[in-house]
Amino acid sequence: MLEKIYTIPVNEAFDACRDDPDKGCPFCRLHRKLENDEIDIILGASMMEPDIRIQTNELGFCGRHFDMMLERNNRLGLALILESHLALVREGCEPGGILDSRTAGIADRLEKLGKTCYVCSRIERSFGKMVENAVYLYETEDEFRKKTAQMPYFCLPHYAAFLLSAKAHMNKKRLPEFRRTLAETVNRYFDELRGDVSHFCKKFDYRYEDEPWGNSKDAVERAVRFISGDRRTKEK
Ligand SMILES: [Zn+2]
Ligand SMILES: [Zn+2]
Image 1 (cartoon, protein in one colour):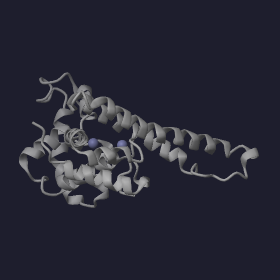
Image 2: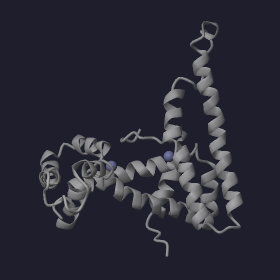
Image 3: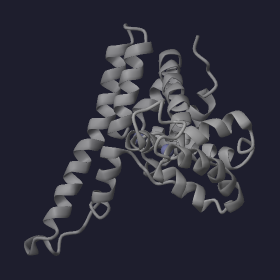
Image 4: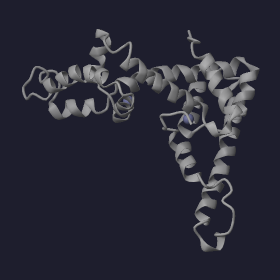
């Protein structure tokens, strides 16, 4: 049974991106909000909860999420999390230590630690449900279908995520029309962007020096955000 807890934020993100195309991919916007909320929660209410501490001790955090926590200026909160995390990691660095019997060795344990992040794992779970909620809205609401067609674009990772979630959860009769709508939205932006990147390159040729920049001034940044998702941590 699908939990429909994200239909309101999904609708809000789609509304915001429809009303201001500069906001870009609605799923990047949702992802950013989720990420910021998780950082606030871990440095706030969740920090002292023992069962959550067990998880943060084990999983640790990725560099991106450590950086976001550092930006929050809650040094004591972060220090408390680190104190017990460091203790566990140090134990794992002890040759022949108590963890040695469980896993192969120090390098293996550290390599595994480098790939896990408490915040990433939380986001992954919620974000999947958000995309599934968007699929549900598309399937059930005419208004949302219109909105989807009006998005400025979906970045490539989220285009893939939306397609995959629909493949798993959407009524088969609705799928072809959904795929067409999405392809039109993405490819329209894709072609514009390619034109803008080409125009950007041309501008470095002296023969085109006097031509206007048009939309190409930020084409490189936009292309990066389109290909890999908008990784900026703050709302623009
Ligand atoms: Zn995106
Ligand atoms: Zn992370």
